[in-house]
Length: 196
Image (cartoon, one colour):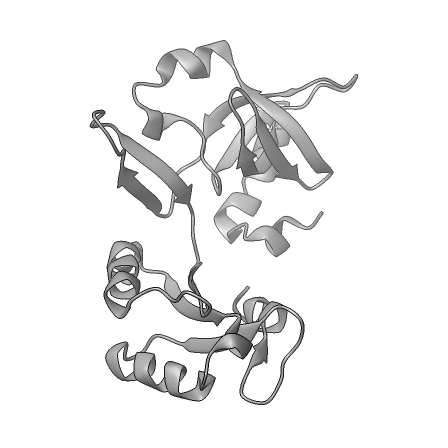
C-alpha cells in the first residue's frame, strides 16, 4: 500500500528509514476497537495494540491513538498483533466533549484534510445544524464539503444546493445519490473521490 495514497505527509515519509533502523514501522490508524486498532501500513493492514509502556503514558482518552493518527509500531515477523509504541505529532484533532455526566473530551479523528457534512434529503438536516457542524470543523483548517444525499428524493435538488450556497459562502455543496448521477444530481462516489 502506498502511504502517500492514505495521506502520509512528506516529513513522515522521511522518517521511515530511521524508524526501520530501530525495528519500527510507520502506520495509520484506520479504525479503533475496544482494545485494538486496525492499522494501515505499506505492507497492508495489521491489527495493533498499545504497548504496556505506551498505555502507562496515557493520561486521558485524548492521548490514546485515534482514527487518522500516524503511529510507530513493531510488527512481529511470525504474525500476531503489532505493538504500537507512539502516536506521531498530530496536524489537527477533531475533539468533542463527551455526552452525559462525564466531562472528558472524546477524540473523534485526527490529521484530517477534508470533512464531509452529509444530510439525507429524505429527512434533511436543518440549516442551523449544518452550520453548527461546519463551525465545529472550522478551527481544524480543513476543506469542508456539504453533501446532500438521496437528492433524487428532494423536490428540486438545484434549489436545495443554491439555498445552502447562499448561506455558506466558500463551502462546496453537492446534490448526490449513491447509484450514479442523474440530471442535476451527481454520483456520490465520484464527488467524494474529487476531494481525496
